[in-house]
Length: 133
Image (tube, rainbow, N blue to C red):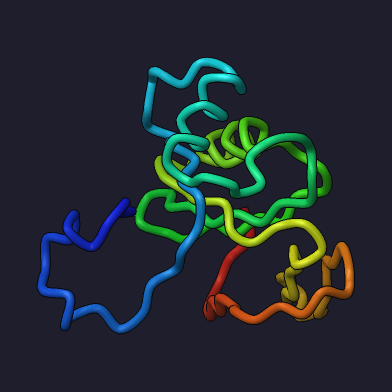
């Protein structure tokens, strides 16, 4: 995960797509409390929704695999803890609040949806050949 395109170690012409979000700084051992994370996020992200509990969506990396989560009411620090407990070593929060949604197909083929509101979702992430944690 990168903070800016300058951090990219390959030519930008090789990039087909990217996802923007707010870093969870999972690997940063200096973040020991919600207030430390909030201060860091505020200095980097300005007026983003970085305080309080809200519906949250997150994407992370675990052993070279993608982990997606939709969480009912969590602070950014709690989302960081959840993604870390799922084994993610890096991750970002995506659009949250009533845009937090997930449509999934479980192991037996049943399709389900988690949705916290009716706000239109503009961007999506699709994972095929997925397995459940």
